[in-house]
Length: 239
Image (cartoon, rainbow, N blue to C red; front, side, top):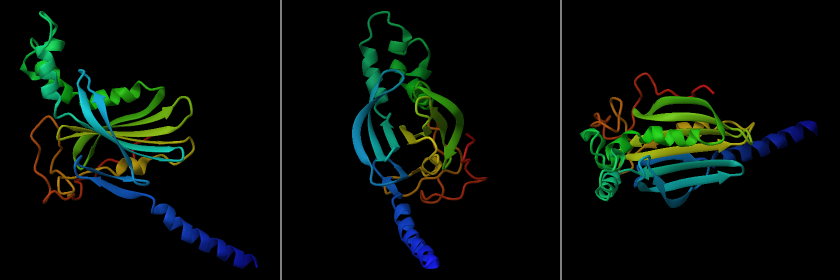
């Protein structure tokens, strides 16, 4: 009888486990150029994101909540920033400082600092997370498919929940990926590591050298499909 009970329990577990595993699935959005694993179909919300130099940029938030777990991908479109800040610079009052006009600091900053806004997007986004009521337990430079970015690991000071953050800039779009789990739960490292970039046809994008959003892109591997990383992509950063 005891053996029968054990076998029955194992049969139940074997039938339940795959169903739980199947909750996670790859989600691809060709319009915003990314793919990531979510535990279910994400909700999509249109919103705006304020850049460091005050441009209100269009953005979309893809999110899934599962119990006390929260997973999201925010895509911010920095492509209109030149137009937005240039138009604003035209309205600066006489003798306004260079932060308003962009004039006086050299051509590198652009009108209204639009070029600087793009160059500093990764740092600006990372800084916003550091302003929360959290302890930053790790902060690193990283790359996904050789696209450079930042990663953070945070512990909430109030409820001790853990948050893993990935921030990347590709083709003047900022990708902010955030996974949060309650204290004691497995950390959301697999969610953080599932990010990839895709082209307009949904093909994976991978480069032959480091991609820096400020410079002309290096050649891609194959026809945009991902390939093996030379030396491997650093993953599983220390806590």
